[in-house]
Length: 137
Image (tube, rainbow, N blue to C red; front, side):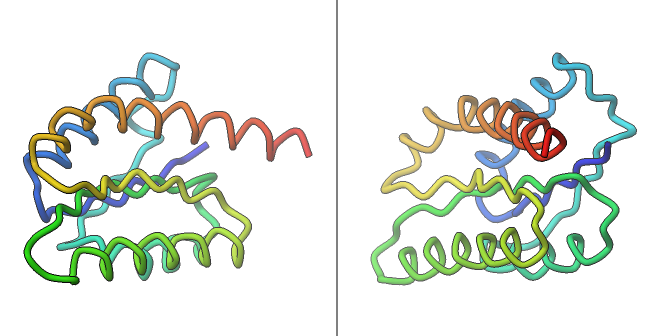
């Protein structure tokens, strides 16, 4: 069982907390580092394209998308958050692979820092549960 993690480096200090929490939880649940591949992209909008390319390979049981989008002074925040999640959903439906969306979309950095650790743990637990559910089918 291989799991791909797509990691957005925009707001890297926060996204790293999500990633580290996710990796820690996966390890605690018995997933070896050899079974996890991490791919970096510059921002949340780039996640869906890479998710599609990875899903097409049929090499992974699931994909976890990790990143952070924080509201600025423009509408751009909403565009990025909405299009990123919609793109990941399309990949999941088209390729029938779980794409677990753990991209924080928040109004301020303080909230992002507060939620990052839990978001990573949730992503790891969700991916493992989805793999289990799909395997049972």
